[in-house]
Structures are given as C-alpha cells and as structure tokens.
Length: 390
Ligand code: V47
Ligand code: SF4
Image (cartoon, rainbow, N blue to C red; front, side, top):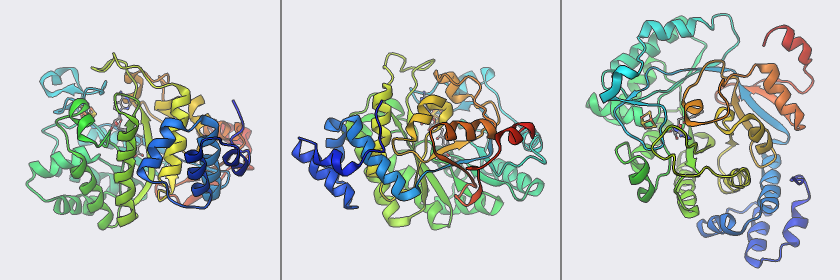
C-alpha cells in the first residue's frame, strides 16, 4: 500500500490535474466540496490523493482516536412485507413459515443474557412484519427499560417506522413521541440505501422513499434524538448517485445537526436477487470511505461496520477517514453473513477489537451511543482484558 499520513500539502502540490489540485487546496483550507467536485473526486481522485486528504481530515477531527462501543443486537423477525432486491435476509411474508418472529418474552430473555455485563447499547432492527405493530414495539421498549434502565435503546430503521406509523394512522411526530416515551433514545441509519429514485426504484421500489426517510430522521432530531445514516454502495449506482445521496444527508445535517455517524455499507451479492452484480474492489471501498470523509464535513463520525466489510478491510479503513468500528456485537447478526460477508460469526471481544485498532497504531476508545468517552484503551493491558474474558 502507501502511507496516507504523508503531508497532504505535498500530495496536492504535486497533482498534475488542475481541477483536482483546486479541490485539494479547498479541503486543506477547510472549505466545503461541492456536488460537482464530489463527482470529480470519484472520477479522477487516485487512492493516494483522496486517502491522504481524508486521513488529514480524520486526524484534524479525532487525532488517532478510534471509537467502538459494547452493544448487542436483537432482530425481532426476518419476515418482511417488502422485497428489496439486495436483501439476503428477509423471508417474504408469503413465506413466513421459513422465517422467525420473536415474542416480547423471547426478546427480554436476550436482554437478560447480558445482565451484569458491561454493554451500554441494544440495537434493535429487523424485517417489517405486518403483525408487529407500534403498540407491540412500545411495549417491548418499556419492558426493556423496566428491566435495565441504563441500557441505551437504539432501534428501528425509517422503513420500520414508516410502516408502523402508517398502520397506526399516526403522524411521524405522534408515532415517534409514543416510542420515545416508551424508551427509544436513538435511531440507527438503515433503510437509506441510495436515495435517488432512478436507483431506488430498481433495488427497493416498495419501501419508504428518500423524502420519507429524511423526514423521519428530521422529526427524530427535532424531538432531541440522534441518529445515524447509511448508504448502500457498490451495486448499480453511478458515482453521481452516491454524491446525490451524501448531498441530501449533508443538507439535513446543516439544518438539524442530529446525525452522529455516516456508515457506508458495501453491497454484498450472495443469496439475493442481485447476485449477478459484482461487488466493489478493496481499492474502490477505500476510495469511497475517503471521499465520504471529505464530503460529509458536518458529520462528526465515519463508521466502518466490520461484520459487513470484513475485519482486515475495516482495519485498513482507519487510514482512509474512518474513526469508528461500531461495536463488539456479541451475538449472531445474520444479515451480512447471509449476504456473503466473510464474517460468518460476527462477534469480537473487547480485547480483540482493541488489538485490531492498536495493530494499525490507532488509539482505541470505548464510547457510548452518543459518543461520550467511557474508556481509553491506549495503555490497557490486553492480557488482563483477556483474562477477564472481555
Ligand atoms: O438498510 C441489506 C443493508 C442495512 C445487504 O446505525 C445490505 O449504527 C450490503 O443499517 N449487502 C441494515 N448491505 C443495517 C444497518 C446498520 C448496521 C450497523 C449499524 C447501524 C447503525 C446500521 O443493511 C439495510 C441495508 O442497507 N443491507 N442487505 C447486502 N446484501
Ligand atoms: Fe425488508 Fe429490510 Fe430486507 Fe428490505 S432490506 S426486504 S425492508 S428486511
């Protein structure tokens, strides 16, 4: 590879392409990159060029710090009324006998498995089951909070909210308030995919559209909650669709400031209706992360979701703008292993995650959901962590 910690001024000065040089100078002056410049970075920006600039931006914002949190996932069901072409995970409602659906008691049993363990967050996301309605989920949140009030609940994608609220005949604000009162604290970033209708109509035509997705996040922000945003990249979209997606998120962030993290999700092509579409290369993945770090100047954090990207690529991404590796995810999250990620058992202990981060000379910092620092592991004794089984 090469060294992204080289002096970005020298890289910019030595770039022969005038347009790229101008963009590089803008970035180093702390100025925002425009839509057209974003597209140009994708078209012409070499990996060393965008990588070095993104690494500089990352280090300006966070130095060497690399965040992770201790969380676990609950997937209430894999039955889904929608039919996204890239989804390897859902069992359509018509084939619900092949799927699973958990009762509130079963989900509480999962929460109870973590009693006494130092997890700070539960992440609840699943398919859209027509019988699991707003009251069911409000009840679930309430019961989790009764059992463990200190556990931060980050739950439901905009796709799930949109369906729940429409079924309950409530406005987004009314529905969101009801769930917030029941214990909802943050919103994960799923369901965004690619916003532009040209792509959305092909890969996920029947679920919430861009305006709906953005409005749900805006409402959550207005009610004082934070959220994340994802982008499913590397399938059939063109570079400008990616920039259009990032532009819409950047504009909403200018308005509300409620997003914590941008999470690009690499399209994986196994066991779904898009298996004929090739996956992006490692170089394209790193270029994407770097350009995302440069473009999303008002997003505090850029996260690589290691169960989907793979551990080694996630490690590498820490030199291309990424400053967050999600969590220890001590469970059996199925969505990515089913879609072809090499991570068949997506679980890492704290000691393993800390080691992964230290191997690339970054500083591991455990955080809570809203990025309060819990513990800096720069000088942690790994042997002790391993002995303690964490
Ligand atoms: O929206 C589904 C993606 C997302 C595939 O907010 C696929 O902290 C790649 O959003 N290839 C759900 N991606 C997961 C998600 C998420 C994950 C981790 C953390 C957070 C957070 C959010 O999974 C879906 C979709 O974009 N997905 N199938 C696939 N074949
Ligand atoms: Fe359903 Fe989500 Fe899969 Fe789409 S990606 S089919 S909404 S589970």
